[in-house]
Amino acid sequence: MEHARNLLAALWRAADHWPERMAAHWQDPAGHVERSLTWRELEDRVVAVAAGLMAGGVLPGDRIGVMVRPCVEWTVLDLAVLAAGAATVPMPPGQGVAACHRALRGTAPRMVFVESGGDAMTVARATGGAADPPQEMFVLREGGLQVLTSWAVPRDRDAVRPYAERVTTTTVALFDRGAAAETHGPARPMTHGEVGRAAVRLGALLGVSGPGRTPGPAVTVGPLHRLLPHLMQFAALEAGRSLAFSRRVARPYAAAG
Image 1: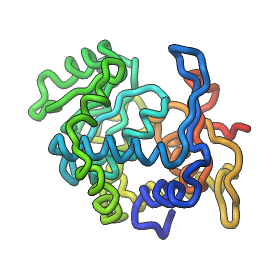
Image 2: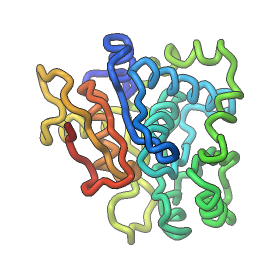
Image 3: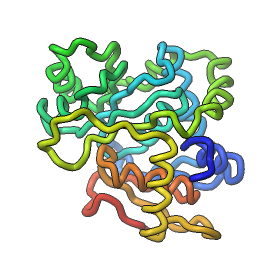
Image 4: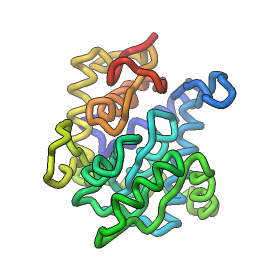
């Protein structure tokens, strides 16, 4: 990843080399059944959402807020935002207006994605007096991603990967608020290169990735609004390891069999 042009390179490589291999799996909370995506299906979802973002007017350098609990949609949104040349603003779900306000301070997101109507109310209250409030808000439980992807036409989707491959390592990828709740300054921007290098170091430290490694067991990631689980997501992608999503994760991240 350190030598890749951007953080999307691992996704494209995995989709090209192992299109039918499992990329993500989780338990559907509605039907209590196991669901999964292959690398090709994950790429298709990322491309569809990125095309919707671009059709909706998202431009390089825009910020996109994501306030969603650990789920495959979080990863899809995160990668789609990067593919559109924008940056993710991770927001803590279910922690109230003050935490939401802290997460957004200094970022002015163009769009925000939330999980529920209650989360949407929290964001609305946190940004009500902002000079640049979000222009669009999408609620996942109310079909927000379907609405977004419906804005794009097939030629928009065809343009996503060539466009995303031009994103450079110096482009801002995400904003890190930091672990301290009392942090009052603006969130710190991290470029594709900075995130990639940090993810490689963390993955090597925890045995998720490393020179000559073949894809191993799935990696279960925890709350992705926190930096370490977020980096683990990218370390797993770089190593070609599938992601497992659980609402009940004891640790922020863990290698799972």
